[in-house]
Each structure stands twice: as structure tokens, then as C-alpha cells.
Length: 411
Image (tube, rainbow, N blue to C red; front, side, top):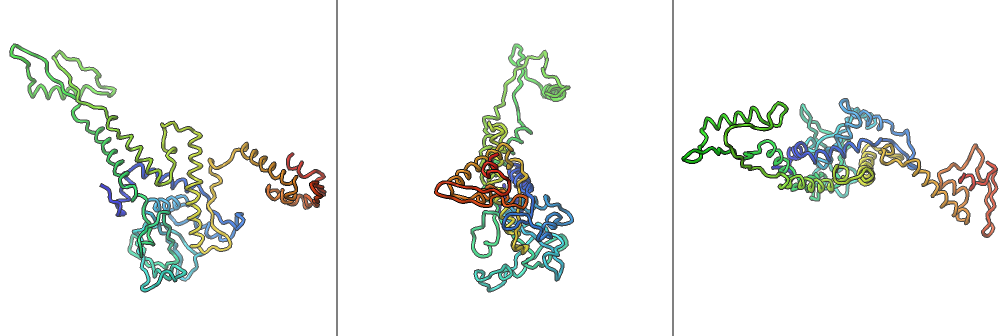
């Protein structure tokens, strides 16, 4: 029914098994909500390596940033790995790259170097001689440094060369996928061809017993039923006839097959495998808005953001970025933003905690302001010029504001 060992089989599952396609699509769309940026060691935005950001803004002549991210993340979720092909003019460095493309695993053949101890190598070029990339007009040989391989967090546990290949999460969902696809086909078949819903028998009798319907009478009865009666607007809902007829039902309740309940249970396992909260899929199982909002936070905090960090870390090394790094910022995602009330309560609790430490002489006013994220200087003057302690007493001299610093922070 399904072949999880081939690319065609995986693609067939993605197209035909709607829950799998839905999960992968939703995860990829969530990944596109992040903003790619360069930050320094203090997590402040940096203008260095602007060519990388420019490249990600316009990866190639066909795609935007979101389309590119969606494609390579979908490949990872579906195939277990993706290859990013950086197109660099001959003799040029990476910062002159013309475009970058996401390639399926079957579009790339790895040619390893012979008789090389891979554990003693410090660079991929010491293990791989070149990649062979397939495109519409043929193949092209590509240097190892111009291909970036990203695999899913589920690694292939094989030995040798297979350790350089990813494995699809769908492999572990073989039975769940088969169950769902069979259930979907069964529901479709029942809707398409319900079979005989019942038997309409002739109850007319004469002195010799029941009078059977002739073949012509049966045909006329079928034709009249099909043409005149049904649930459509222009169909009769009640049949009126002078003939003596009796109806014997042959239908059954589809709910007794438990098809939808089976689909739900298998869908839960699929969601777990992809670390996607089932609450975001359910619509009629008592899931409240608050629960869904918490589920969205979990999705980003436990899945999307850690995965994006892995992507950023790999691409930072691939592009040769040093001193700063790539980062995917999800601060603009609504479910991750604190309300003004929550922010105010958090700041107040933090200020009170550091105030206690300050009053007990554990920290200085400069440290107090530093921990609160406040500037150490205001309008060029040091906020607190002198802090002295004698036993448990504290004397504060303020040359900047004329106001007790603690009172200033609490006001």
C-alpha cells in the first residue's frame, strides 16, 4: 500500500495522507514566522555579513524567503534531510553567491574520497570529493563547500556512509499511516457506493398467493425512484403508490465501524512524532482558547525555536560567519508576546526582589540598575556616584537626580 523506503512512496504519502500533509505544512508555515538576522555575542543586531541576509531575502529568481524556508523545512520533515546548493561564480568567494536552492536527497549524489580515515579529518572536503547535482538538463559537479546538508533531529543509525544521510520520521509511522489511509478509503467507499439500502417487495396477492413483479415492472420502479425521489430540492421525499409494497432495511450505522475514532488515535501518534500539540488540531474535544494559546507557545518554545536554532547554527558555519552569528527571531509571534499587564507584574516582582538585596547590602545601586536593565548613566551624569555601607546602614549620595534611587525605581 505504501512504500516508505522510496522517495516516490514518501511523496505519495504526503499527497494522499491528509493528516501527514497537514502536519508538515503547519510546521513549515510556523517556521516562516521567524525573522533571520545577524546578532553579536550580546544578542544585539549586527550589520556584519549583510550579504547573507540579502541572500536569504532573495534566495533565487523563483522564491522569496518564506517560500525558500517552507521548501527546505518541508524536505527535512518529509525526507529526513535537505541539501542547500549555494551557486557561486567560478573563482569567487561565498559572499559573491548568486543564489541558493533547496534540493531533495535524490537530487544529490555524494562522491566520497577513497581510503580516507574520516575521523582524522577536520573539514568536509577531506571526506567528500564532490557532490553530483541533478537538474533539468543533466548533472553538475559541485564542490563540498558549496553544499550544506541539514538533517532532521532523527539521525540514521546505520554505519559507514549512511551516517551522512538523514531518515524520515514517517518510517516510524508506517502502521499509523496505513490505518489512516485505509480508514479514509473506507469512508470514501461507503459514501460513494452504499450498496443495497433495503429491499422493496410486492405484497399483492391473489388466490394462489403473492404476485411477483415482472422484470419490466422492476425496471420501471427503479427508474421512477431514481428520477423522482431523493434529498435534492426538486425531488419527492415521499413515494405514493397504489401498489401493495413492503420495505426491508439493509443499512447499518457507520459509527459502529469506529472509523473516525481510529483516525483520531492514529493522528495523535502522528502529532507526537512530529512534536506538534494535538490541541491545535482538535476542534470538538473540549479544547478552550486558553488551552490552544498555551499549545501554540509550547509548539514554538519546544519545537519551532529549537529547530530554527539548529538551522541557524549550521548555516552560520556554512557561510563562514565568525564573531557574530545567524539567528531566527520569533519575538513578533503573537502567542509569545506578553501582555502589558504581565510585563508590568514581572518588572514589579523583579524590582522588589533586587530592592531587598540592595537594602541588605548584597548589591550596589549600579548592580541594581544593571540587573533591572536600566542605563548606568542618565544625561551624562552617573546615576549613583557613591554608595557606602556601615554595618547594616546604607548611605546613598545621588548627584544626578536629587532623588533616592530606590524611590526613583519604584515610582
